[in-house]
Amino acid sequence: MVTVFKHYRYKAKALPQKPNCSHDKKKVYNCEELGMQDIRRFHERFYSNVSKSDQDVFILKYTEQESPKRIHIDKRSTQVVIRYFIPTKNKRRIQVCQKAFLSILGISKFKIQNICKKFLRDGKCPKEKRGGDHRSAKFTEIRQSLKNFFSQLQFAESHYTREKSLRRYLPSDCNVRALWKQYNQGVDPEKKVKYSFFLHVFNFDYNIRFKSPATDACSTCISLRCKISVTPPGRNKTELMAQLTVHKMKSKCFYDMLKKVEEPTVMKLSFDCQKNLALPRVPDQAAYYSRQLYLYNFTICVGDSRSAQNKDCTRDRVFGRIEKKIRKVDTLIDPQEYLNIFSEFGTVRKVTKEVAVADWKTEVSSVLKSAGGLHFKFAPSKRIISKKDRKGNISLQGEEHYRSDLGVPKGILKKGKTLAMIKPQLLTSTVSIKPEKLTDVDKLLKKHFGADWRDIETLNFYREILDGNGDAQEEENEDLDEENNYFEENEDLRI
Image 1 (cartoon, rainbow, N blue to C red):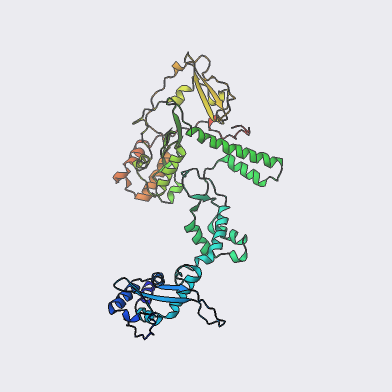
Image 2 (tube, one colour):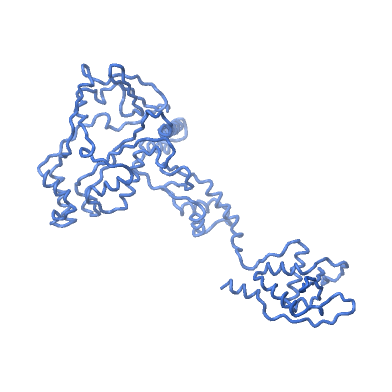
């Protein structure tokens, strides 16, 4: 609607009229030489421009301006002398009087005088000041103040974001309202803003988000941060801050080693077992209190330092992608549904069915030394270097640092034993389950699917387990050895 009114404002209000002038014999003005076609053509060309700026340029094109040669004391004296011209069919410029020029175009003399006066004074065409954005200029200083505020924020590092991403993250305990209050408390009263304005700038002018609350975080980092927060300034606090800095440098050193280009004969492997995945996964609140079956996902990642989208992808990052996908599904009944999700992020191999697995744990216990019997501490070791001599004996060297070699390689065989004595047997897919757990699974399935759940074809997996392992007993857990115990990191300031 505003655009329609603007076009109507600069359209012709009436047809052009032929001037009826009576000038003296000096022949300065030649109004009588204009024909009706010249008048019509000049009128149409002027109103073919639909904007004020174009019409102002048209007027300046057919006028001449100069300052008056004689300046009178009267304040109302002429400030600019204007000459008017109209082109004819023969491309001649005929000088006409003001009355003729105004009657042909249908405009007022004040409009022409203002245009010519400003052009003579500034040397530029006057700009249209009506309409447009007049509010942004009022908030320029405030926006600059907000820009300075956001540039001083301490952003958190994200381990799972690409380096070239422009998105930045703030700690999870922060929010937009807290930032708004912090900004208003630190600026002058005239630069304070409303929450709605602050939120608009935050959402549309900056790519900032808040991190999710930390889960399964590093125990050493949490412990050192808590100690630093409660320790008064002094030598002890400085030592704790140094330990935290070295600890973070060790973590960075690990990823630097992954990015390092190795020889073609070197293979990098990263492996771990994901947290237990419940079967069945149902949104029923009874599942929270019930013992369930679990699916185990053991992931092996092959490191690659070449430029690629998933280079140096560790198993933790694979687990994060899998869990992100699983969170979007509230019900997972068949194990194959889990395997379908796994297949989106890697190659799936079923243990004992597609991959033969030998019972190494039982076999090597009589030949190799246990973790507690080694000449170095197994749990805190960052690197374990294996060497083989000409006789085929293997020695291990454990290092608690990434860039410092302080250990000594020694043998791992028990007295009188050789590697040739290790002959492991293949494992079967049989898993022993306690009757109590099977009872809970049966109750959960009855509550969720009904008493006739055994007749449902998609639940054949559970029917076969309950019918075939009803009397099976789950093996007792063995005592944890050193490699399963939690350890505190060495406080040595080496990397």
